[in-house]
Amino acid sequence: MQPPASIPLQLAAGGVIAGPPEAVTCALQGTSLLRHTLSLRAKLLEAVSSELKDAKNGQSLWEICVWAQSVIMSRGFKIPKGSDRLVLIPIVDIANHAATHKDANADVRNNLDGSISMVACRDIAPGEEIRICYGEYTNEQLLFCYGFVIPENPCQGLVCPLQFPDTPKRAELLHHCLSHRRQLAPHPLPSKAGPLLYRAKGAANSELLMALKVTNLSEEQAHELLEEKSWESPLLQPGPQEWVDGLAFLGAWRRELPNCYVEGEAFGPCGQLQAEARALVEEAMAQTAASLPLPLYLRWRVERALSWAVYG
Image (cartoon, rainbow, N blue to C red):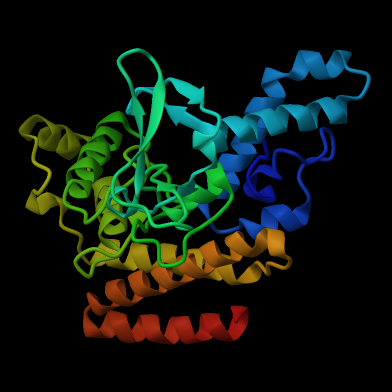
């Protein structure tokens, strides 16, 4: 049984003392995976800290622990579906991934007697690969758990590296607003993720601008909207302040992405994810800039030209 590709789990598999190599962290720079994989490393270290202290070869034990974690992440199935119970199912776990349930030609089913079956959903031609849907996941999710990405993934979405509001009512309001908006999305989106960039109705920037608007509300305004359960209130419509803040945020994010140069076959999926990130960020910037009044738009164009001259 093999774990997924070396990215991003190689972050956790770095030396116990030295930590992950710089080339690996650079390969994930500008995506939410860098934060999540460093968090995974920290949690694994904490979980096995006593065993590592007592081991004759701590590095070897650490790599075994990382291997076990990667097997669970890449081979585990939630049975029953939708539950938090993870099980390993030999043979079934060698089936390849279909981006959506509609594209799958087989399905995993939990039988009444406790057994598990993999059942064809349609006729499968000789030589055709067996594909089940691991979940309708974005490329960030696929890379984190399975070590690969899908070009032109229909389940696209990129987590913005934006902090949630630091007060309880605004944080709760943003959670409800994101949940409401994602019910209208063309495909399932991560339910617990922060603001995402994704192409839906020509507005890749919609969740980001809404998050900035919620951040700019007072705690009293957030409380009133929560009481009214008003997720489409005019108070949540972004304006010039959010457009300017959004462009500043996206510009900083865009400058971070080109500084990462991914080399080597193992880093290929990371390069594809960064390319997807650059395209979405550029699209969101263009959409946000188009909302600006003409004087602000012209100012932004000048500032962007100067930024490109400095940062490339």
